[in-house]
Length: 215
Image (cartoon, rainbow, N blue to C red; front, side, top):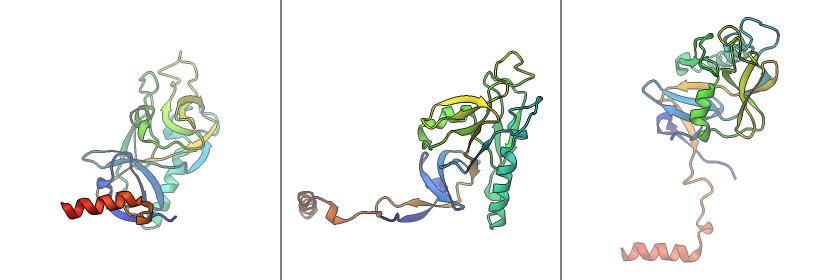
């Protein structure tokens, strides 16, 4: 049965709600005065976090293979007519598991969810059929020199649990963005989609008619 969609502003979508915009599906995670934080409902591609050695910053999102890919996605959206202003800059804190801040804060228009962000919103996030990357390094080589696995990055497994893994492993890319609450998006109209009086038991239908006529 085909879905019936309706157009609403993103501000009217509840947190945890699924909506469609820019030809993609997203889940709304949160909202504040700056805009609405959203996560891709599905994985857009699978790739290594980093392909090749980088002893100084091996698990730094800023120097990863993922950021050029996301930059190309953003360029494709704007090439197809979406104004750049649609994508509100968001700040990604790249502190590692222990809170070390070697990699600092990264401001982008499209990025990845952090481990803390996943911890905050995991109940709203639909599971997917492949593991996907987070932005958070397990440890960093200079500020966490005695932390094992400073080449590791956090990711989310298919069952929703989170682990860390070597940066050259191939995981899914599931972008996080911030949109204006005034952005027009499409959502499924649950009141209309698939509704038919034939689905209502006769006794319930008669009781409803009686209550209305006697009221």
